[in-house]
Length: 315
Image (tube, rainbow, N blue to C red; front, side, top):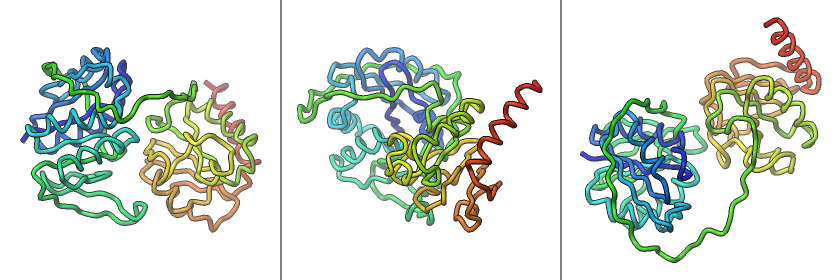
């Protein structure tokens, strides 16, 4: 039983979500391969070869893979699929864009957002915004799956996989890369952060998010937000945590002025410790919080910041 993991990368760095996917794949079998499709991506292939448990790294290096356009990567994966029983990718924007095309071309059903491997053909995935877990059994000869990274620990290093070049397939020519706008921040990336502080509609406006930024800087935390705050224009879309945003599972999640709608809880309820600050004691967020503070955030957050200053001064 051979398993193929599609690496997520930027041609220079192997993304952390790939390591979580490798952990899931290792539960299916030990003949584990990683596909690196990119351009001038040798550094990524080297990093992939050092992941524990990986037996082989396949590298397809061509100009039309530079931005891993879904149509091109899907065609490449389908060409390799005959040698594999399982094809996995992280349940990120890239994985969710590519694997449905792979599944359609192979005429199999895709299994999305896998959070548990029960056996080689049986998997657990959340449905209804995470309120129900569905156990899914696939009879397809090739299982095509996206893996929710927050459900699996990152694979360790120390591996020594062989690296093999595979021939690229022709450019599909049906899509092209136009450009990208990247948000620059000194804070940790949201999905990889150990600590996240998020604000909701209760913040009142975008200017008030500076209160959270002050705490985030002192904690080394990432910034997040509820959909209500994003829709109101308080903060950019890439802050959004929830069913239609980013799914996170940090060591500490601080929810400020967030009521706790089911869509938001779906994106953060697997956090190890959840702290909620809300003046409404009936807010649903308190049902999942490990620690809850019923208070006016405009008094509580500055007080929190002051206490952090005292801790820093005390050494």
